[in-house]
View 1: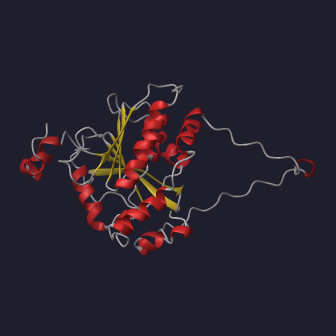
View 2 (view 1 turned 30 degrees about the horizontal axis):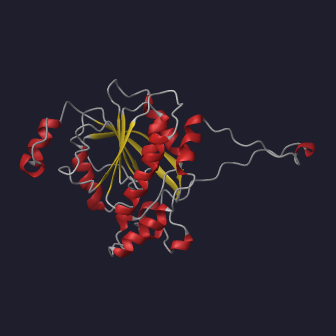
Length: 276
């Protein structure tokens, strides 16, 4: 969610009909009042896991990504483009979603992508949380891509004491719908799409391309599922994000190996030489 000081109302830039059913996540019920003698005692700080502590250290002094996004969109005269509105995950919500799919991933399903990766927060979160071989982000805006590369540098420079090998963290500056630039369908196993403000055309374009993922691949979208008959929703749940509540859809790619039919359908001349 963009803060009030950059003059942008996150939900106001999106289709309001998307939020009729969704809206802000309901706050948890308050706990019962403690006994009187305990009320003046300070509550202990929430204990962070080593993974969360690493993540927080990477972004502790990060620049304001929302402001950077708005600055570049103003320069490009993209301020009114709904699909570029900036919002960020909440670490705990993202962790809860990844934990749901962890046990269902097969050996070799170890490449994570974030499409529209912003300043890199989900990519870094995925890297610290689970033993992916590679965690990659694709982002069109140059300013956000620069912030993501700064985060990558911090990840690589820091001492790694987590319980799995350090994944390769990579960011690509370009269009998520241009597979000739970078084909995320070739090796993507878990693909995140922060799609709350995607317009219909962009969401449909991503869905069409995602049909080229291998069967069993997982795509996570926000607010709306992929408009594709080749994906089955295996989980949906309302989670808190930086802008409020968002329904998180976990979808699995159905069917036999679809890579070759996919290339035949879209035409090899469009994407160039892509291995099947």
